[in-house]
Amino acid sequence: MKIIKLWVLSLLLLAGCDKAPQIAPPPRPALVMVVGKHTESSNMSLVGEVRPRFESGQGFRIDGKIIERKLDVGATVKKGQIIARLDPADTDLTASAALADVRAAEAKRALATAELARYRQLFTKNFISASALDIKEAELKTANAQLAQITAQANVSTHQSQYANLTADRDGIITMIRAEPGQVVETGDIVVQIADPKAIEVLVAIPESRMAEVKLNAPAKIKLWAGRHKIYSGRVREISPSADSSTRAFNVRVAIQDADTEVKLGMTAGVKFNAPENSPEASFLIPSTALTEINGEKIVWVIDANNKAQPRTVTSGPFSEAGIAITSGLQAGEKVAIAGVHTLAKDQAVRPIVESAL
Image (cartoon, rainbow, N blue to C red; front, side):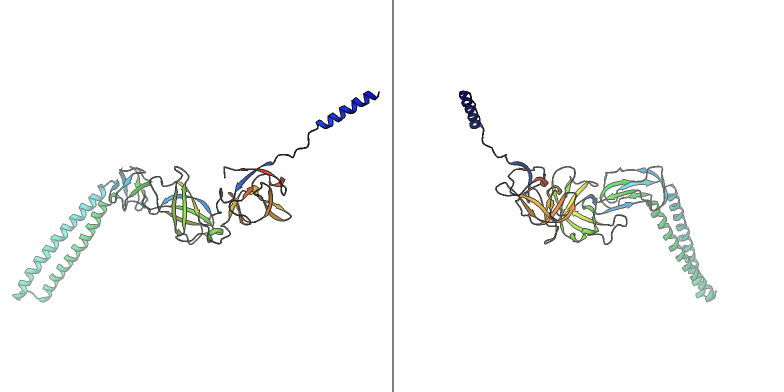
């Protein structure tokens, strides 16, 4: 029996010797971002449309029926180039009639001139009275006035016959056509729209709450949503003095200073305005998932040089779709946890994984 007990005790001792010492758990993976490396200060970024600075709608100066359209949308035009024509039949007849009236008025004036010359000869011989001579002089003046009036009317008719051709008033590109051959148009109806492609800008609508961040002639960065990843230089050219009645936003035009052939009218473009110095908007932008609240204070978890989580009290600015602006409490280059912040503890060892998508 003693031998059996000794054998059991030996087995227990051997089992106790084989038990491995307890090992600390490995550092927990933590998704982090580097402040100031993958983020920028929360400058205001808005989306706008590429528009021409100069764009004019053109129409005929007379009524008529369109018989020909020479150009299509997207065509390049030169100043004075014919775009469309009206049926010239009526205007040509009116101009011919006006010219005939001018010829008749000229003949009437010539007759009055000859009559006055004869009456002056008779007056020198005392064959007629002075009043008779005055009547002929008045008739000549009337004939001259009528000729001037009819000539002016004829010039109007001649011009109207020329107005049957719609010509471009500037160099540019046709961006819209509203009439086709066979259509009857009235005076002033917009037929085509011509844009000047040499001066291009982006039209954006800025909320009234952020108008203080935009100044006239302030620089901006512009990036097209399509095409190359090029950043264009812009400058605020115009700020609307009044807000739009429906959106309560102010229209702002930002001129593109280095536009190239990649910039097309109607494209969508992002415009980033530089935040004013010492502005609360000049801050670091972090995802909303990085911010938490402990005991009424806003906290972010900073991963220190030893890869340990440390709570940091911060001051936050406005929220946006891009994230939260942190106005104080963070420095560029620090690592901030952006996921699972509610489960972290002070001095907890973590294995930081930098988020590459930010």
